[in-house]
Length: 294
Length: 294
Image 1: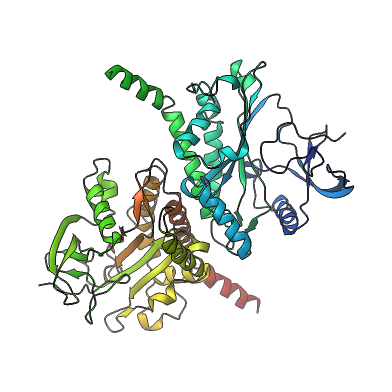
Image 2: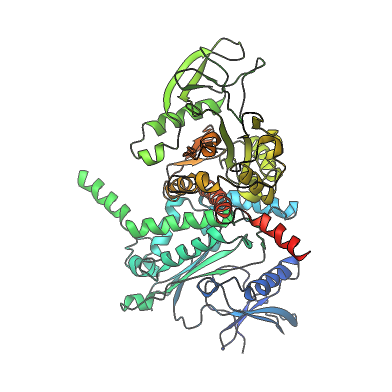
């Protein structure tokens, strides 16, 4: 029985007769193969990557498992359509907090069409991509059973200045409920979600080490998903913080050069997360000292 | 007594009635202040950087010392003109091999004028900047007393593919004379120039660590100079490998974000140098194995 994924925060979404991904109960995620070269390109990437013997487990774990392609009934009622069959990344999660971050100050490959380049360049300049090296593409933050999720409009997330992006990344690991998201975030779970030997920062650093070295693929317009379970954090358990790379419609061959565009953006994100870990209350203390003076 | 710098490999050059930098015998380098905002911007950077107490010696050593400004007779005979007074980086060097590498896949700041952005973007796309994250802006490689320097046309260096850039960076540390630059480079000095605890790679890694952290400045269109003395290498002495950052007319404030554009390009350059150190003879061994098969 196929259904609409309950925790998708960005990308094309099924529902209301639209074409989008579906999930089943066995933990598989069905992504419609886009009809143009994006579809064939993403399939080419998954096929290459999943059979690449140079990709070891400590890196492949950051990518959705690929199970091939399958013809299934498309979500828009248009009949049987080819879909990529992937791992459903939200399996086993109850109320996941998720942020989708598109990495890289440039979302276009040098050999893309002129029209596509101009479209992407315009968007990169209008959003946080150019100044920050990444942009927030979508987010949902679990509050509690009563308040549910805080899930702001996706477009409102894309062009925030550095300080507001940092605030969002603080809210992401705070105990605030979704109804008091305008309060100062307490960063109550920063240490357990972002920190620690298996936390988000450690995973990002492991990914960074690979990007400093690998010259096989360049990942344009690709996102890092960061996920964890606030319910577990509230109970003092390991919140299951995890990063995954998704969206490979614009991956090209690296041809002996590292992906300096992705790596730069990744390092910028790492700096944001590091600063939150080092000084979770920088604003609070600023506020208190100003109040103290007054 | 002011004279034209003998070892300049890129940038505006004095001579033939043109405006360019001059040097004196006390080790100072006089760079004409460009009349437009580039001049005032570079002066602003040197003034800020040289008085910035957060810049420690292990980083400031990568920058030319700044001695203020001075009115001197311009090289084009146009009379007294304001010049930046900087450290002459070639002082004490006899026959330096030098390469000037412009870092970053993007040489323009987000807030530059539309005309300037389009000009830079065009050049970044036409040169190695976009694919490699840096481009070679100029080079001189010392051969020996008879052959002198190999100093190819600057424009011929800017748009080379990855394999040819690697070849040039191999030639840079080879014992070949300037007259046999078309031979296979032997990488005779790779270990002593690029390698070792005080070599070029170590210095680049030290600079990288700073760029992963600092959010004060963004260095657009800035170059790394790599210099060493082949004469010393030939005598088995320390060749004095050194890197310096130069050209700060397009530096802007970092505003709390790392310079992901510079950092990405720097990491790409580091990967090139690392590969040469790890496997200086990759092509030779390829050639021998092919010959062996035949």
